[in-house]
Structure formats: structure tokens, C-alpha cells
Length: 132
Image (tube, rainbow, N blue to C red; front, side, top):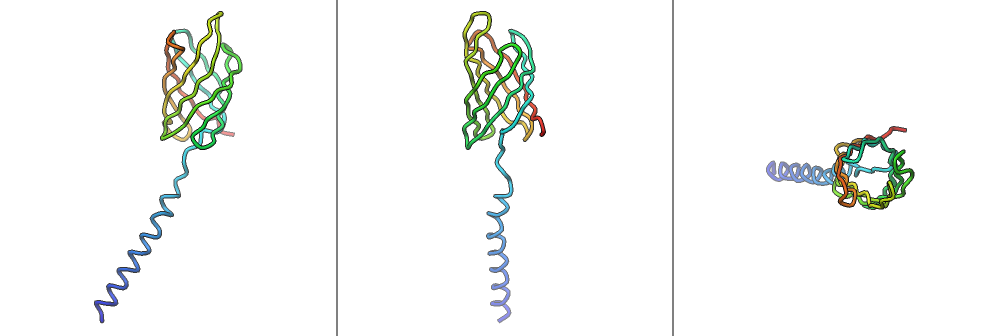
């Protein structure tokens, strides 16, 4: 009789642990890049501190890149498994190119990565979320 009662208690405890496990796994919210970010860009063609505004829906990114050198540019991209990628067409000094960013989310409020200027030049970037 005691064995049956102990077994029943062990099974109930095990069931409680199993039931709570999915709830705990859902506690961690997936990262969302939506918002304004201050970037620092360093490249072979110069440096800058553009403002980047992201809008995220699922894995899809859209947004706006604002800098003194390139003006206002809309972009599209992706964010999946902590990796961010976006690009836009630009022009400087009469030369058209695509500016492609590829990097990773370092924390909820920081990212870093590399930039490719259609093979003409390369660079790096860091981004820090601007808190509202």
C-alpha cells in the first residue's frame, strides 16, 4: 500500500514538472529589432553614424536608413536565428551601388557585423538600440 502511494506521489510530481516545462520555455520572448538604432559605420570609404529604424514582422525586416552621406533610404531584410541582413540601393559621387549589411544580434540592444558596397568597398558596423 505504501509503495502504491509513493508511486502515485512520484507520478504526480513528474506530471507537474512536465506540465510546467512548456510554460517556462515560452517565458523567453523572441528578440524583436523594431525601433530606432544608432549605428556606427567604419569603411574604406569613410565613417558615419547613421540612424536606422527597423520594423520587424516575423523574420521580415523593413525600415529606413538615414545618414548625412546617403540621405534617406528604405530597406528590406531578414532577421532569423539571431542573424540580421538588410540592403538598399544608393548612389554616391555618381556611382550606384547596393549597400548590404550582414551581422548578428549581440544582445537585445546591440548588434554588429559587416557591410559590402557592391564589391567596391567593405566595412563594419555596430548598432545600439535607442530606448524610447
